Image (cartoon, one colour):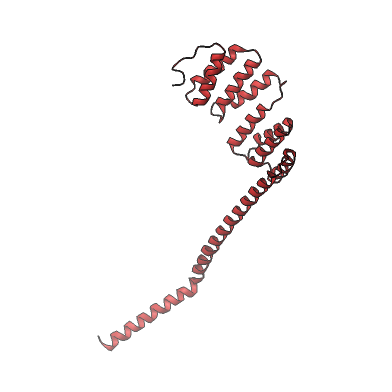
Length: 220
């Protein structure tokens, strides 16, 4: 290789190096920002996870602390505070309703459950369960039409507890002396493809007690 060729190669390499460094000087800040963004995003994600975990632990600790008092009335009072602090969160609300029921405050428990059932931010399962329990706590003198309307709403197709609600609807008919309607409701439960073995057995036992004949293939 001649001296002139070596000189040209050196000049070419130097030009490439200058262009490279020039590119770094011009656009290097973009790479720095990208690295900072990645590091910052990872740090924020970890901080957010830690905050979420801490908040969840604090909520759990508050609930456990509210369950400590041996006196049911004290537990109800403590759980009421937790429920208010958590804006009617499902678990504290359900526990509060149970404590209210335990101390004989069925009306208060029903109000707590109805509030949860009407909360659009609560998961549907909790809302349905709250509505179901609220109906169980309905006063004995509730009009049959109102009682049936409540159970029918929970027995609608696709509802989480529809078959259990149908059972309660049948019991409401029986309590009102409407035997034929009760039997019709019970038969519908037995014939339902989604009925559980336990519920089928319970309903069939009630039908036998009512003197009804059970289809051996019902529910199969």
